[in-house]
Image 1: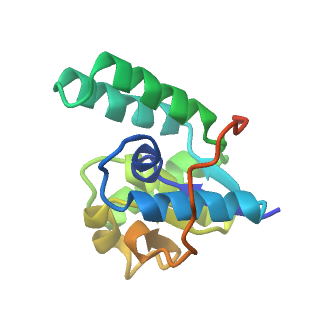
Image 2 (image 1 turned 120 degrees about the vertical axis):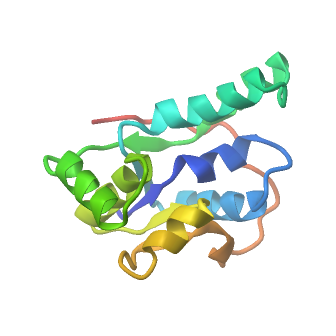
Amino acid sequence: MSELCIDASVVVKLVLAGESHRASARRLLEDCLVNNVTLIAPPCFEAEVDNAIRKRLYAGRLSPTEARKAFMGLDMIPVRLCTHPRLRQRTREIAEQFNLRSVYDASYAALAELGGCEFWTADMVFYNTVKAGLTFVRYLPDYPGRPIQSFPGQIRVGTYS
């Protein structure tokens, strides 16, 4: 079974209406499900996606009902949390190499690199910063996939370390 590392920025687009590149995120998820590709992310993933929803709620951009629905949607997306003995070290190296202000994005890139898979992100600034040096990092708007009809329902979540 193959794996694909997915950024919190991509997953949040799946559960919030009006997000740019939401259709690309949906195509990517459906294609992964259809092709038995396991979505993976580093341990910080859950806090990052929950924080994105919480920030929007706090700023008044989501109602409490919308936030609850978004959290429920997040819980349906099958992302396996993974780590690696060298994850923290490689994360720091990537952050240093590209002079990143924080290590969150670097942790996804490090996991993908250590796992030998692609890393898909919707973060244009991060992508533009690392694309020449980390050729396995992909930018969501570039996802070619095929059009889909609707977001799949009733997905079981599997989280493992």
